[in-house]
Each structure stands twice: as structure tokens, then as C-alpha cells.
Amino acid sequence: GQQVMQIPQYQHVQEGEDFTTYCNSSTTLSNIQWYKQRPGGHPVFLIQLVKSGEVKKQKRLTFQFGEAKKNSSLHITATQTTDVGTYFCAVDNYGQNFVFGPGTRLSVLP
Amino acid sequence: DGGITQSPKYLFRKEGQNVTLSCEQNLNHDAMYWYRQDPGQGLRLIYYSQIVNDFQKGDIAEGYSVSREKKESFPLTVTSAQKNPTAFYLCASSILGAANGPQHFGDGTRLSIL
Image (tube, rainbow over all chains, first blue to last red; front, side, top):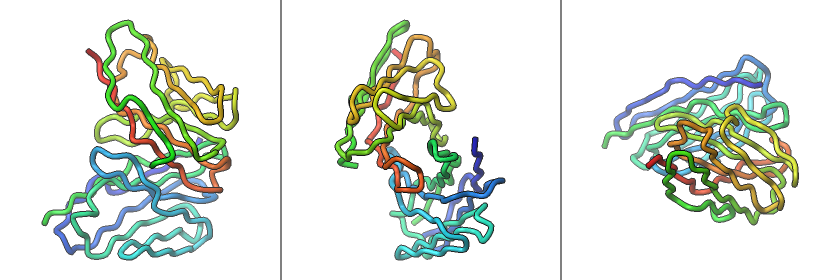
């Protein structure tokens, strides 16, 4: 099945600093999804990327799908304490199910 | 998400006991999934189902069983064969076909051993 890596595993930032997490696959992906899980909560869907080189923005969040469709990034500008949580990427496993990356845990210091 | 209901929220299992976690969805989704999450870890797929009366093993199916008798329901049984069941269990559903949309998750069940 698919395998996907995420880096970094942890990130501690001061409020107002930027944050980026990367998701990498050894194979070409049909699409990629991003989820956020707040501490003690469940994953919540953020966005899906389908096209090569696609860039989507949601307020302070910018999502990018690599040209080769093997990697993706999530960038948060000027982090806030509400951004705290774990960010997961998830990829389509040959149309059968989803494979989640291990996640990047973000801490934001006020 | 309001469309998926998991119960109970907390569950305690005694040695040698089977326990069943409930998952119900009213989103009319064909596909349903069960994940296990250990503290500070990612989501690992236990079982998934794309159609009623059919389901497939995920990466860590040993010690678990499921049924899919109705489209809306996908209960997970943690059997006594699962020696380390303490974890956070998440149920999710999606439109059939990964490219068609996101997964919607329930609030989860936290299972502990007594």
C-alpha cells in the first residue's frame, strides 16, 4: 500500500511566527487531503488537492501540491494559539481507503 | 462532525472480555472506516467497508471484528485476542472513492483496560 512521510514531527513556534509542514510520498498521488486534529479532538478535514502544482488558500493557511504530485505542504502565516494541534496529510490508497501520515504536532507559545 | 455518532465516549474492558464500539452515520455515505490512534501517534486503519455486507481488513485488523449489516452502521468489536486495546478509536465515513471527498469523523471512543 501507499506510504507517506511527514516532517517535522514536532514544531514549536512563538505566536506570530510562520509554520510549514511537509508531506512526502515515493509514488505519484492522485490527490492529497489535509486534516487538523485539536488536542483531545477528532481530525477535521481542511482541504483536498488534486491538480499538479495546485495552490489553495484558506485565510492564513496555504496548501500546495507538488508539480510531480509526490509531495505537498501546508503553510500557516502568523500563527495564533488557535492553530495548536496536529496536522495530518492523507492520501488515496489505490481507491480502496486512505493512508494517513504520522502528523506534525504544532505548539504555539503566546 | 454532527453526521457521525460514536458511542460510548469512554469504555473500560476487563480481561477476557469482548467490547463493541458503536458508529452510526446519517450522511448517506457508502464507505466507512475504523482507525486506532495511540497517544501522540497517527491514525492506523483497522477495517473499512465500501458496501453493505462487505468489509476489508486494514493494517492492524488482528484482534478486531466488524459488521456492516446496514449502510448507516459499522460497529467494531474489540475481542479478547487484542492484548493491548487501550487507545482512541475513531470512526469515519466518506463518499465512495477517495477522490470524491473528505472523511467525516466521529468524536471517538477512548478504550481502557481495567
